[in-house]
Image (cartoon, rainbow, N blue to C red; front, side, top):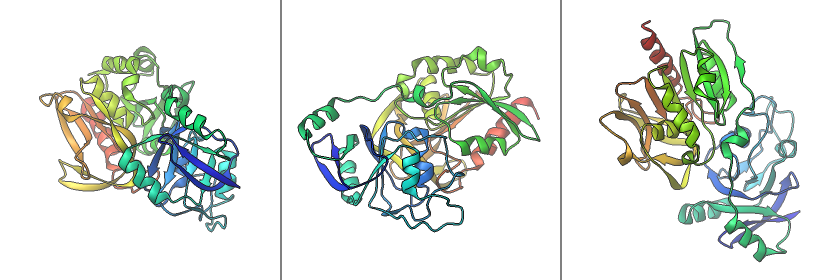
Length: 359
């Protein structure tokens, strides 16, 4: 069935619809990963967004029940060049089209994703929608221009706390869920940590009742400046437990420490972003999914040390506090999808807990 991708600037692209049958407005962004489409559409950090996959062939290895990063998808649509229905992988048990239907994601294929991505790189991200017809085109464009997406974190966080154990418990870590992925939790559990996951808006008292040895702040969607209550709550944890934040958690920590964030023109999304670890004097290829970054000039560099930079645009990719046990990185070190280069950051968090406990 013929369909259309309409953008808020009034342009549109004609393609073929697939997947689920209902469309929703979303912020259109692009991801440059060559694999991992299943992990991408189940990453809560994509809440409220229509995702363009720049790799031209999607669906060739089908889908399975293992690689999901969340039980549901939060994306509002998917845009691809070609979707292959002839899956070829020993773990796959359904086509990608069936997977999108199951997760209620509308897709459009046969789109010139190269031209579309170049447009977004030039103009910036904007609202868009996938539709079956160009009827009411002018009304749709006006709606896209006025539409706002809100309550990002509240829409993806867990509603109740839950625990994940391990047979060889070394430390207890409280996790603030702003939109966490399963492989991040696995990365913590695999390092001998007993994990208790809390809703994003849990209070300091609720979290500390768990008596954690460390605090982990997860990835998640949306503008960090909107989470004022969370930012104020984070300050209460200073010098109480070691803190490790990634992605949105990194941004929230930076705001709590007096910094500022700003929105990028088109964000960093993909599994091929080079980041330099200053201490190691080495560049790692990282997985990223974010639209906001920390403004370096806003940080108090007498108290905060910048530990990582993005090689492409020199944006901040990591910080640590000089006197308090606080570290954070902008990228996703568990890499789902993406390279495994940065898993050592989880080990550094465990080492930080070791040091604070004098072990």
